Image (cartoon, rainbow, N blue to C red; front, side):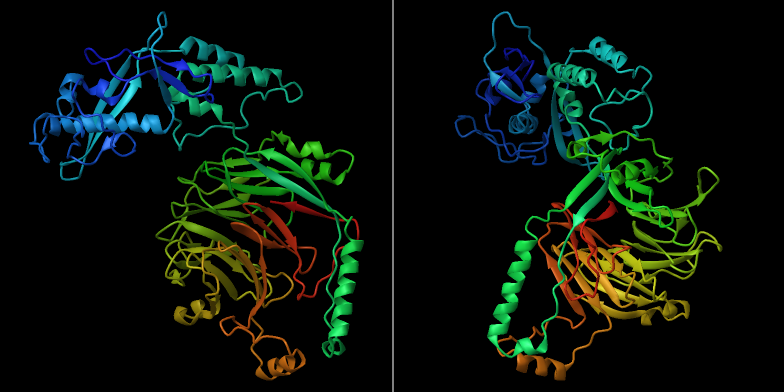
Length: 600
């Protein structure tokens, strides 16, 4: 599929039996065939089909000499009208070379000799120029398209079989802002997959005859919200080493032997994970469950929609061991959300349920807008007029744990803002600059209501006292600052049991726990060092408030303290999630056979 230049080869598309679906073949040719005899055969660097360099490349085998900077012509400052005009200009030839090179690199098709008796599909070159603001040409663009090849009747028949005759058509590739619905229409029968497999096969055949849409229908979406139940949890709490055990190595060996015995005893104690998957339109940026009714969850999707769900039926099925099997973990269920809000003009991450007013919700987007959701008798009323006060994307939201009308927000602009829904759509006080880079996450302390913790894109975490902001002294609001992490902070959360304890996760693959009440005690350190003769000195660069470090997960995203089990933390990452209980935090291990419901 190369050129309709005089004397050039005809173009044809055939499925390549040795390649994956969506790959195509075209007649054997080279760029020299494309450009005509004696022209340049160089392809240039891989790109998207355009040329940003106005200097044409000359083939090493060509006997003609081309000036390093060819004189400007009418063709170089406008779009060509014929292929012959294009081939006469080295700049446009270079753009065509790069388009063909990109098609080869992306395996869009393979070149093969033409076969007698096979129908050929003609191709068409489309040319364009990209101009700068001052009118000068920035880039020469050439694109190669198949022409006159339609499958409208076949595609219409597929739409009829799927019951989608009334759907709104959309061009391909699909626009990122296109709004598709997961809940409208009649779902396919989940018990009989024949109809589904037939449609998938038909779509694959359609893409074999339409290379321009091959990638658009081949990949299925497997986005879902997961409701987890972790059962048969067993663990051991490491008892603190008694002071008598510090006097000799024999006792230490005995303690180690005891630990090994415990591990042998618990070898067969495997935890069991049950999972219910609920299909979700688009990827889920963030999910939050309502404090008062944990079965009600809100999701922020990359489609720009905020959806509210009732997962009570799925939680009930997890409670009955006989209704869920390991095989069920792979099934994705269709479920209609209670509410879908499309008023945000962009996707977002910030969302939080009020701990004081059942059903009250705030959601913030990347377009720096915050919307308030007020519950009604059977629905939610979302105010169309947003709260606006940040100059960049709103990254996180937190309701005041005690005052029902106040919430806090953080933003890419490096500020934290305090809002009161009773006094309008602007912050109570001017947003306070707390970091020099993006503020990714915040957490409002439920036990010490004046403290807000924030995590930044530069890896630092800070603690702020909002009383200083309220008194008009925002410069004095910071009460603690730690720069232990070296990559962006992805989650922070105060412990619901200890007012001074804070958990933090970072993109450096570390989860840390901090106790702000701790201070370095030189006398205690010296006493402990004297007892532990082989103990190395504590690193001076570690803050004394650093209580615990958990590693082993890749690309940590979020953490939460378990609301019913003191000291237990659940963390999510790209390679799964961990359930952990730090050994140096006083906590109670669940009894044998206990189960933990989790909503991710």
